Image (cartoon, rainbow, N blue to C red):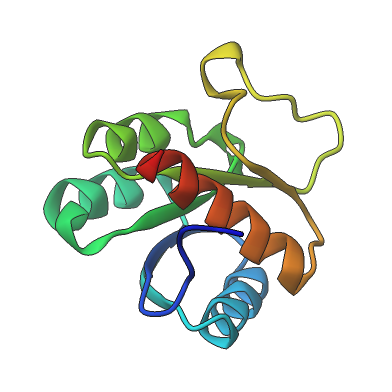
Length: 127
């Protein structure tokens, strides 16, 4: 049994496909969480983390943002103690060594998979 749940949790979403971002936001709300911010570019995401990190409980990052990897965003979030979940639509998109312990969602994913990945990230933070 998980020590945490998603009720009231604040999720920062970085996703470059608008329809996918809307779908994920709806899923997060269905799980009782709130998306506190959505960005689609690495630079915007870095600014959001720098300015509003205190408002983020967990970051859900699309691994490939218009051809740029989101590792810099993951590092910035982790630097503020924010757990990270990666999402990818590419089967061959392996994480680099430094991030392989983080949960990864393969798109398209179901509600239960999203919930599980977010809970694993939050559990790892409280362990």
